[in-house]
Length: 416
Image (cartoon, rainbow, N blue to C red; front, side, top):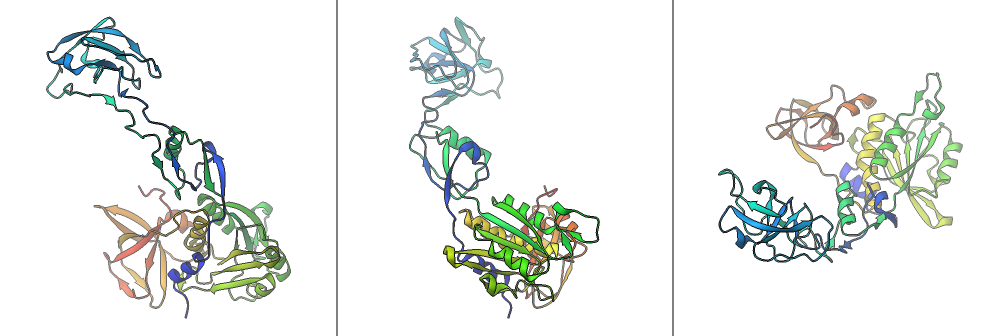
């Protein structure tokens, strides 16, 4: 009995672990998975600061408006002098400047005559204008973050917004998980590497670029090893040279045809397969195991993906990418969304099906519309569709509009 996809994915992930850490500059950290917790080295802001251009005053001086106050000077952002005010006094402030001692409120300049030696504080000009409340327009010290506060994004992929957070707290170098080194190999005498483009009737290798692109988006460092012909010797030599990689992904040659040699050379290559074939469509002939390099005390995970492009891309999405993410310490679990059928579909009994679908959001509900053909050679379907729709083995016959389904979104293009 064939494995179901969930069990197969469990077998892939059960022995995968993180592959090490390295320290990088914050400017090299975008897209890397953070491997440490850190603590703020600074109070932000360090002192009470002005939220806008205006005047720092004592609220008690605003009991009767309009009010006139003496302007002691101007405080610019970054000016650290210990200014102070008393009754009837104020300072003109720029946004972000520190509030002088004795001041408890900042009045925005729109409510003043913008005086330089004396300033008149006016009443609000309309009923909808803000009142001048005690403490108005002051950002208290430590209101963003206090020194010693935990900044914990461990296991998350660095975003530009996180970069800003880390720099602001003084964390300029960070530990991140190392990128997995992945070898991508294509097999088949009927295909040719894009690097060796010719005008023959051989097909260009479209699988490897897709696998590499998906892995790069997931943070991996890929090496394209080219196309190996349907011959045992060169394929065996290639696999025996994979010791320095963290993962090997082979496209094609994994089925049961006369020229599919992955199975026949497995023992000589030191491969122990954990499974071969999964009860799914597309991508039934997928294999996963480990290449044992005994002389180096190392085992390298290897995926054998189907040669048909859609099957290959689905298996890379569903199995290879979670493994690459787990190697980097990132959350690797698939997170399906709930949707409903936007049109009726027919489903055969006895297998789990992942149909390519376009999505439409109507009144907050996601509706799925299957691509016109689910043939696994149609690359265009992967560029036009948004998600894989999962239909389980117990779902059979005609499934009507509105049937609840699960979807795995792989393409956000033109979705929102």
